[in-house]
Image 1 (spheres, rainbow, N blue to C red):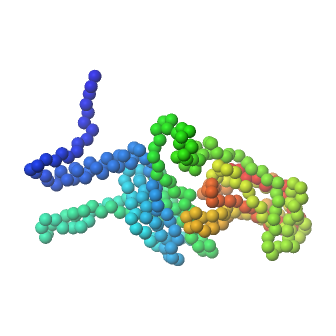
Image 2 (image 1 turned 180 degrees about the vertical axis):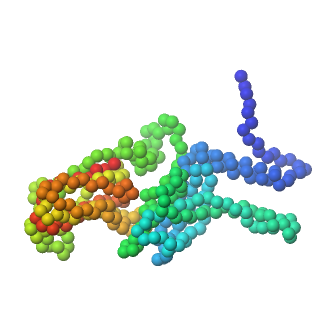
Image 3 (image 1 turned 60 degrees about the vertical axis):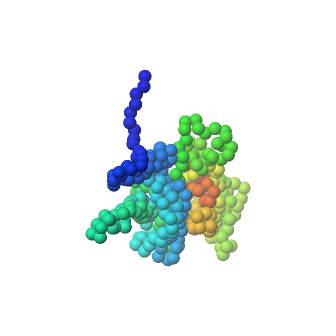
Length: 331
């Protein structure tokens, strides 16, 4: 059995053929539609290359040249740096920076002087910033937060990269060996399924702060303690390989007068080749005799970069205190 169904038509040219406007429009539509069909069918939408966001002067940010593919398969191409003003951002508010595709007629002037039809169609990159929850399929370049004391925070963890779609059973030992497929390239649900999920428990060893030599913790076997004069100390929270989020923090011990606990995320910012601005993920007051407290981390602050982020906890004890256990839940 054989059946034929027409799928499309393309222009066919020959000598002395009379061409009109529709022929040329059909020619352009054919190529643009099939290019976008290729992008949708063989690629996942996202950032293909570039479009890095960097801090510019005090009142603007800079978006580097680059390419993205949106959910409709349209190419978003920024050929030169874009400088965007940020003076309208409200302080201490998260904004998402989005790049979108648009097009409009350009170059007016037809065959006669009074003909105002456009001779070209210009394609644009439209940048938008918004504080609402992003829609599925948005090409997000960064999360921005203007901090009055620390300046502008540029978080690139919201970026989704475009990639090729893989056929079923298309990942074998060859793809793993040549790093075509790595842990970092897996989607978050897959990373969570394959990666680290669970608790890391630590017997505390609190190190002193410069300038607080008279208020340091004493580190014994299995715990840290301080006298009635209080103590100030900090310690690293080891991030296990494969962990992409920190979900909870736990602390156990004794404290007559309470303590202040702060969990911070810091490290290296690969986008700006400089130190990462330290973010406070959790700041709480703990009291009790004894205490065994669990603190959930805000989902908007849970993300950990596998190469660039580290965690540390600091404890300011107001009086006699013993810290017996610190733990963190990763996912």
